[in-house]
Structures are given as C-alpha cells and as structure tokens.
Image (cartoon, rainbow, N blue to C red; front, side, top):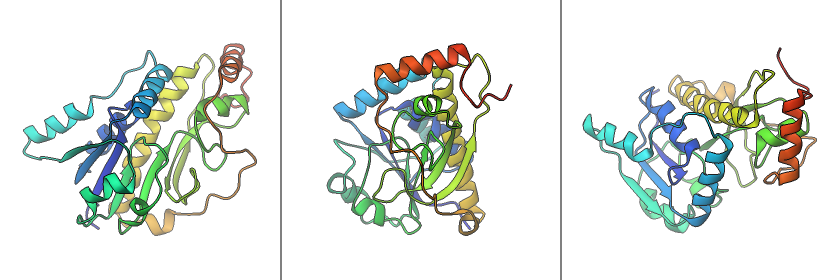
Length: 245
C-alpha cells in the first residue's frame, strides 16, 4: 500500500503534537493538512503538559517543522480553528479524500469527523489501554500500580475505547520522577503512531487491530493535587509496583 493521505489535528503547539509530528515526518508521513485548535482550553492543556515534562527536551514547533518542509518544496496547509468540532473542521476536509485522520493531542472529538476518512481516525494515548483511559495516565498508573506505557488506537464516540493497534510498556527504573514518566510516554506515543503508519503502509492493520476489552478501573479525570503528591511520594520512596531494576 501507499503512504496514507491524512489530516493531522492538534491543540496549538502542544508538546505532545510537536513530538508526534516530528516522529511521523521522520519516516516520510506528511499530512495533507494540519488543523490546529487555538483556544483557551488548548492553551491550558499545553501549559499543563509543559509542566508535566519539565526538564526534558521538546520537539520543534509545528510552525518550524512545516517551514522546514516548505524549504524542501513541500507546502502543507495549516489551518487554525477555535475548536475541533465538525462545524469548524469539516469545511476544510469535507472535499478532501482522506485515508485517515491522526490526532496529535486534542480534546475529545466526536461526530462527523470520526466518520469522514476511509480507514478511520487514530490516536496515541500516553497510557496502557484498556487499563488506563482518560487524563493524567502516568499519574494514575503510579497511584494504582498499573504498568506504564502508551497505546495507539482507533477513535470512536467513547473516551479511549476504540480498537487497539499497538501498546507498549515503558521500563520504569528507580530514580525516575513523574516528569520523566510523562516525557517517556509522550515520546513513546509519537513512536507508536509512526510505527502504526508504517504498518498501514505495509498493509498490516487487519491483522493488528483488536478490541480493547474491559478495564477494572474507571475512566480517569485530571489528577488532583493530593494524587500528584502521593505519586511523587511513591516514586521518591520507590514503592511503585512495576520497576524493572
């Protein structure tokens, strides 16, 4: 199969989306269009993630990566919308024949967007599915002694409930802190998306996709301060259950 024609959606200059774009571009997967949500919530989520990965390197900005493509003669349209919903996004992609839509760090998106591309909408989640759905996955993973990793999955109208393509654990070593774990899951999420697109090009998705199954845990919300304090304490005291050393 050929490389997929896809739209890439992300919150404005989100570090998660910047890393993922860098990863997929490294294997020649170039979006047909990039659609950024420029919103107050997007700003809040970006700053939240920057704090979570504090002290770790950040991929070049979306603007810088697209500018580098343009210098090589590849111009990718970059659109900003106030929110990633069908009313704002579909006018830009409705007449565009897309194989896929790739989410590079967005809010929950439902509706016509999910039905538009021929082969689905995919997302990489910084937690192991189905065990750790929702927000702040590394924090809740430590808090509940769930293995830590990232997953690439199809998007449906639930929250991180679509069929799985890939999932991989991160080796957690003693001395790693919360910021390290957030950074490692962020990078792995980008790597898994790159590998998922490579598998698409190789025609392997039918043999890879599978239902997630059930989780004994609820869909998590943002971790409150008392949970983050408990997480920091477990990592400091090295009482998390899944160290590899």
